[in-house]
Amino acid sequence: MAKILIVGCGAIGYELANTLADAGHDVTGLKRNPPTSSQEKFKFVRADITSSTDLAVLDTDFEHIFFIVSADSRNENSYDDIYKTGVDNLLSRLAKSGSQAPWIFVSSTSVYGQNQGEWVDEDSITDPTKSTSLKIVNAEQKLISHNPANIVVRFSGIYGPGREYLLRMAKQTPSIQQNPAYYTNRIHQRDCVGVLVFLLEQRLAGVSLEQCYVASDDDPSPLWDVLTWMTEKLRCNPPIAKMPENDADMNKRCRNDRLKKLGYQLLYPDYKTGYLELIHSGK
Image 1 (cartoon, one colour):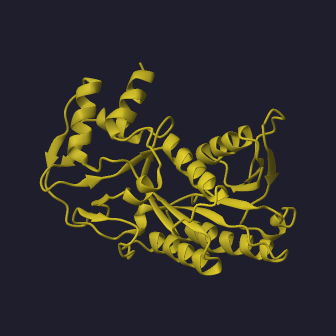
Image 2 (spheres, rainbow, N blue to C red):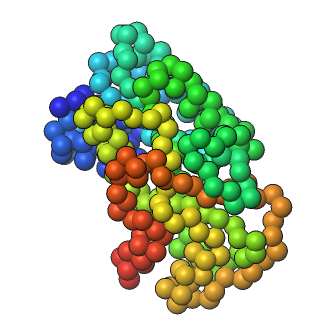
């Protein structure tokens, strides 16, 4: 049994906490506004990572730490709050006890600036055009420098129950770039949890891990193809082809070879598997 801290208990962090608690681990979830229910399988600490005062109540003897926090909005201040102030406050609090607990830090494939449909992996340059994504890159680098045992996991576009943006978009006869292909990447939120559990299990088993893993499914696909398929399944109007945009900043294809070679098996290897389940569950 390990003593584990999960910083950020949204949909993914909450499911991760329950999964690890079920496996017998001593789990603490840190959240600004935790639920008041006493039925949880793990304990909560109410704290805001942007407040060093709040973090004074946090234990420092954790053996493993997950960081799964998203910015409140897409502005720079929100990203600074999480990826600079929040990370710095946590590192400072844990340093007071000499903690060397390794982190698994949830990042994003938005750290890649490639936008011409290129393939990217863990060794690809991270030079994003957006300043908000650069703040995530800086947090990654800070954590790896702080402790080389820390791991960065870059999730691509997360979807699943409650994250059904593309399905809503498909119902609105969207205008989509058809040629040249505009590639998109996805991972189901159940696979997000699965990947995090898997990496912890590998670490506990003594497996030597890399410092970075790209977590995306096997099927990076043009957005036109994805939405065309969705409209067929939803029996609504197909998308309309529009002129290419010169300022696209997310057109890339993510490789997951490193994660799969380690032994992770995707629950949802392609968008059709995951979205078909969502479509059927909504009927």
